[in-house]
Amino acid sequence: MRVLIFCLSAVCFFGISCIKAQIDPVFFQKYYSITPEHQYIGQFAGKFRLLISFQHDKTEEYAKGTTNASFILNYRILQIENKVETQSGIQFDYNFYLGYHGVEEKFFLVGFDSFTNDFIALKGDYDQKKREFNFYGNRDDPKTKAKVKIRIRFWVERENKFWIEYYREVKGKESLVYKAMHIKLVEE
Image 1: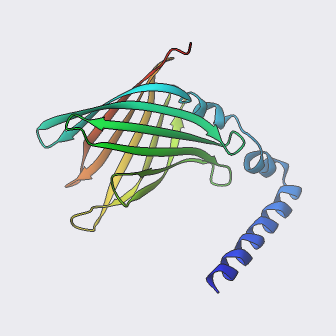
Image 2: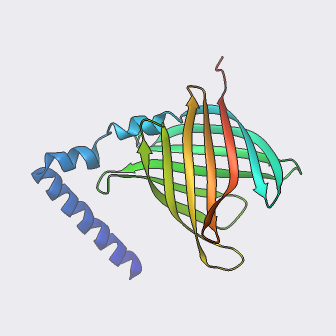
């Protein structure tokens, strides 16, 4: 029954969006076409060396790894695959998916990792002058099960280097969880 309801909903949504697109060419451009917003996402494409600093109370732990970021789904979504090893030898993967939602006119970020049974789904904006994305949303605190506000910032330092910073709100104040530096590998 759930599958039937889901399928009917998807067909209705697709049908309405097709009708709206025929009536409104601006909507068609934003919803069905590759837009200028996809160029902003593309600055994070490539193969990178990855260095991470995790913040734990008053200490730091470091990790290293690789990042491979490439467009999928007809150049609409940037898939960022990270393979990481911590100082203590723990290995894990985490992936981000960046895209642009044409109807809401917002960027989105979805993330998964092999370390937890959790995911994030955030919406955000791009600042052209600063060359940065800021994604906002909530995540469940694994200890208290309460919703915690988070922000993930992607920013370009220079053509071959970008950063990802992950913040969470603690007692009404934003606190850095980790900072990851990505340096583009030279292709041979």
